[in-house]
Length: 483
Image (cartoon, rainbow, N blue to C red):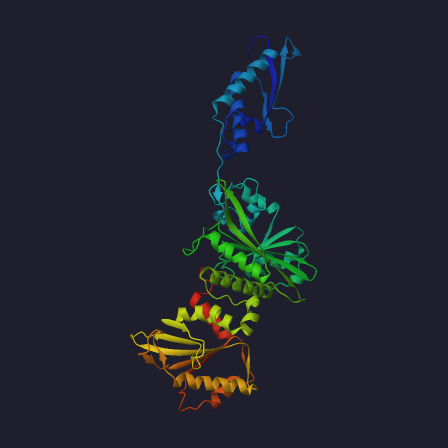
């Protein structure tokens, strides 16, 4: 009260919360606007009550949608007549401005890493991460490279996402929201054809999806059913748990994955985040489309999709290590072109397996396309020969089988120089390998073995590799998904 004859009946001071930060300069994004506005309001109310102790109606309110920056209404009484007092308005405005200039109302944002989401809500980190990247949590911050959100944001997710736990999965089809979320282990037996159409279903796993790359906190799968088709997206990301592979940086690995996805005709997209004026790849998404049968369950669909994803991961590792990539695109070539099959598949593999692997194809090969030296654990060398063939070999292909038998005999009977330049040191092979880019069909193996003279070719001295065996060796020596 500024004068003895003026009684202040009520004070209402309104301000725009966003305008509070006009004076501080710098980056206001590090401050919590909502909490700072509340504190400024409380400080102003406390000081106004100190100056006007007899006034019971004191209101300080804030909004972010006011048309003006602030509005002050004061009602006073003089000699029982209510009048407006410009003097009181000036006093109150000065008091509030002084409080503003003290800056003790500023509150920095409090963030929690999303890998702690299970502490604050029932949703696993991958679901919260998906919400951050899709703008469902407006306050999400990623300035450090890892997603962080205010604790109050966790409960609000239920406005957008319905998370179904084990006991409620049977009722998941009754839900009317646009986004559902669940653990694969809880819905694996549900038929996807019974799920509502055009609802996004986010799926996470307690133990991972069976591929080391897709660990529990580094991947999420979501799908949408449209009639008899399902579109499935697999996301891998490194902004919940950091990338731990020591062989390659994540950017290089992600580009290898997308490159192989393009080769295989799989939809893909890198997730790019800008930091300090340069682009960082922190995730990659792959898209698959599958036709659904009436009884297609989550389990059966995921087994099929994850098998394709596993092959994609293996191909990416082959690219990164200069290993052989035997995919659908190359299969037809390897079945027809022996030189390409030998140089792109067998030679890299054999160099991994043997101490020395020499491609000897030519006029003096004596039934061997490769000469191989294997070092035993006791320091002795054993020598192998390998003959490559393209395509399938059938039991009815008599001329082909006869040729193979002749090549096996010549390979064992004729020595080979241990070193290409030396004509003095010659060795004999102990084991012969027949490697084909197709399959042995119509009892071809049994027929070949039955025609091999047992006294000439001891049991175990001739090995037969088909496409499946070679592919398994590639996975073994380059490592199947050892992230």
